[in-house]
Figure 1 (cartoon, rainbow, N blue to C red):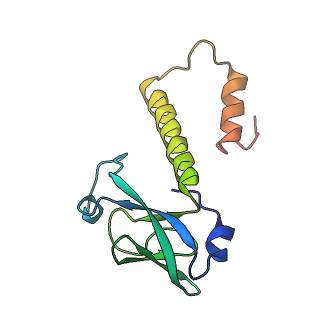
Figure 2 (figure 1 turned 180 degrees about the vertical axis):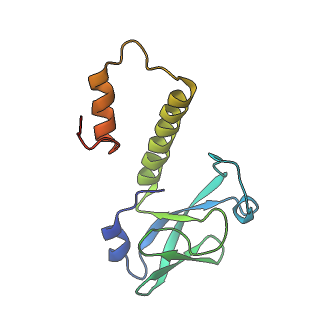
Length: 138
C-alpha cells in the first residue's frame, strides 16, 4: 500500500500539477493476479481539474480523466490495479525502492527457516519491535 502524504492530498486545488502512475490499460482490468505481481506502469503528469470532499479529478494524457480518493490517493474504480497520485516523481521512486527492498527481505525470510549465524536474539527482537510485531513483552 503506498504511503501518500494526506496533507498533500487535502491541500491540492484546481490547476495543481501532480504525478500520476497508471497501470498498463490491459493489465489494470485483470480480475486476478498472482501474489506479488506488479503491473507495468506508465508515469504521467496530470492536472487537477476538480476537487470535492472525497474525490479529486485529474486530467492525464490525452483527455483521460481519473478520479482519486482523497484519503488514499488511489483511483476510485473496480479494477484490480488502480492508478495512484504522487507529489512528484521522486516520491514515487522512493516508494518503488522501498517496496522492492521489502520484497527482497520478505523473500529472504521465506527462503531461510533459520536465522543467519551473525543474527543474535537481541537483533531479532529489535527488528520485531521496529516492525511492530513485538510489543516489548518477554
